[in-house]
Amino acid sequence: MKQSIVGYHKDEECHWVAQLACGHNQHVRHDPPWVNRPWVVSEDGRESMIGCGLDCKKCDEGAPVDERP
Image (cartoon, rainbow, N blue to C red; front, side):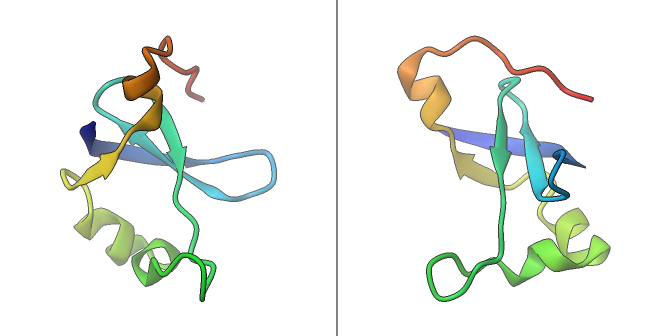
């Protein structure tokens, strides 16, 4: 299910995590060639993706909302 990005935080390993409108969190890594998300590496890039949708597998599974820092 597509959910909008509403913010970001870093996890304990300093990886970026998108905060989704549904209350779930999802890692957003730039790890070519497997995952190509160059927008993750800059503040302007991350800001440009606020409001864009990501597929939320946790919603599909009916998972409870995640904790956020």
